[in-house]
Image (cartoon, rainbow, N blue to C red):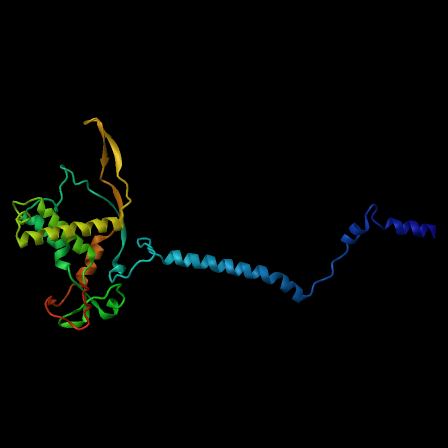
Length: 262
């Protein structure tokens, strides 16, 4: 019996507490349901994370990097034509030439091509219904509506101000007390006010950088700056495609035309 007790003691691991001894015991096997209950929360989180990654990848892949997201952007029928590009401005300084500078007939033709040939556009009734402001149907085609992209109106205004620099070429009465002079002054004031608002609206934050001139021994701001621009030719291309195909009679009311509040 003594030998038997000694043998029994030798089978036990020495110096283990009851808690440690119990730790070597095989755990009670879990049921299949218990295993699923344990795994499901982690599986759900992994699936959600995977879906988020896939959605982000799909969004970025489908996004045209030449497009830009603008919050609270109003509807424009030409929005699909907007693409962005990087442009380095010319300085417009004495040594630089531009086909838009001067007062020759060729310069006039270049300005005319910029905006005057595509000033009025036509859009469908469906497109017109999405505009932030109601517009007028064409006199002889009430299924299409009149719009003018503001950039072309602004270019018209800038061209009018250009002509003020050359009064000997573009005669314009601005000094007399005639009604014509009053109308001309009103037109010019309207134009620079429109341009002021447009410049403040776009608020170009491209940077003019400064350089040292060894020749003149002073600092100068270099206006040959790099900008992110809307591609003007794409927008003008939209205007060409949507150029009005019928004349607008300015002196005839068309049913459905909004009434000007005067």
